[in-house]
Length: 627
Ligand SMILES: Nc1ncnc2c1ncn2[C@@H]1O[C@H](COP(=O)(O)OP(=O)(O)OP(=O)(O)O)[C@@H](O)[C@H]1O
Figure (spheres, rainbow, N blue to C red):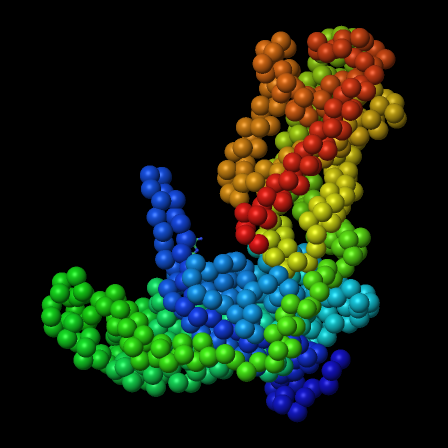
């Protein structure tokens, strides 16, 4: 453990919250410049399509060692600008963004850390596990596993997370670390790669002012270590505001101010807007950007606009309307500052040629080999998802269903055709239950995983194929336990064929049905972003498969009979019948009892088919997100 530093107050030492010293190795300094950045989106309505302008002509710059804060009311375009600068949205509609005077390139990905607004973390991993997995996936291959683990521990100490390193992250239903600690873990996830550029979307939202200040101090320390830090911020306290080097103030997508944070108040007073009472500068600036001029001195130009009495522009209370204020502020910035700032930005920077070329010369490579990626993701998936699989709710659901079925078909026997006919209802239910249940589990658990997949794939952490195979194989042990429990209860309560081979074949058939169903669930979850739409489509699909299964209607019309080759429920049902009655009868429930080879191969084909569909949907999902 690192010793406490001289800067730590006795209180820090007592509470263990020492001031951080970010001691990362040197990084490539990156000078970020953006001029006249515009961004539009096309909004498709039911009857018409229109363009919406989100950002208009935003210019600014930030150097290594500086923290640039972006402020503005909600919806003013902060996140959009941050995403454009961080390469998360690929192309601005206009203007240019350069990194050491070079345009964005994929090589930059490994030099950029991006902390999103939502804390996307696995709730059941501990702080240390989260950071260790990130280090093992993201740090260069040349480092050993031990060195990567050490880096994770260093980050834990740098961010003051040592006291909660073995605590689970937690989520909506699991108690875990505090909001401030969770935010620090998100920051740790990004600084672990020692990025040159660090982007953060509202890192202090939802934190109390002391924790927010501590988080901002961390950003300051990170910048001091030679990194370029850009953050959006919602409502900073005045202490926090003074920690920023540069400031961008946005209002409805337009630039109201760019410059040193410490000079913002001087600039606004120079255009006639200053607070009439003592006020937090951040609060004053946000009021201005919102067009709220309460307790603010109004410049004479704006006063005149009220006196003209243009009803559209007045709010009726003697104050100009927000639209008029916004127009005035944009115009004031354009006429007094924008030109000189643009000139400065357009002037070529005195940057070493080496710095320019280094952006492209770094070889883009994965932090781990394909097999390592697979193995890390396998163990991580197993650790995380075992909680979903073995929640008390799921166990109760499965065991309760099994007990009810066992009681309904209590020692039903399957010797006479009548008994077989009755028992076939139970087998049909098993095929339907294990055809439905995993589809919905996959759909419900996937959104969280999708967010993580998007985040990690945007940072080039691993190949999709490694993720997919790890997910598929880590599901296998988890998938086996609940069905085995279920079948153990049902099998002996209902008195199905007392034969070890029949028992294991029943388990195996159910398992194949589950793997196919999960593939379908994953494919639907990855195709439809909306969980409501996904559950509706899944219900309709599985219902159709169930009906086409031939249990209710024996003679299915030819044009619909092909559905039986998609219906894993039907193939499962047929196989279960064969497993139970192969020695006893030739026909049960209108189905010929044979050796089952055809059904096994059809079911296996479905397992591969639905998994392949899931893989294609995941690939397409990547394209949807634009990352
Ligand atoms: N893809 C999109 N399609 C339609 N509108 C969009 C899209 N992206 C952003 N917007 C709109 O652009 C505006 C700016 O959004 P953005 O998320 O950048 O704002 P913000 O300042 O970060 O807001 P907040 O502080 O609430 O997060 C909003 O009105 C938002 O609805």
